[in-house]
Image 1: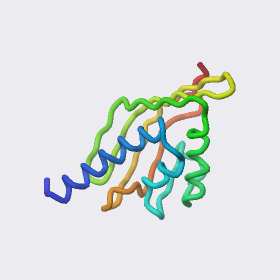
Image 2: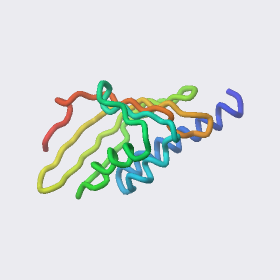
Image 3: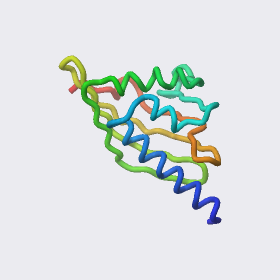
Image 4: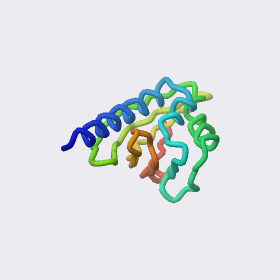
Length: 129
């Protein structure tokens, strides 16, 4: 690996760790800051693509506004400009709790910002606890 590749891998690793941390305790704005200005989010794959910062903040606000939220990274793999990782997200509000375990595929730019994110999960993967 070249120094540039190692540096990008380190940036990607840090971004994935920050993503999980911000799902736990951060704001929608902090999560959106992990993305490049022209980034796209398709969550889940097949859903409408979100491609503006405002859309990202609105999307992640659904999670960050929950009374309870716990994200736990299960595993991650990084190769080149891409990270693939699985995590469990438990959310709760108004006495109802839900759990989902998606696999996210993130592609990064040279600055270590997410240029695209695609989440692999189906509606039946969302379980009420």
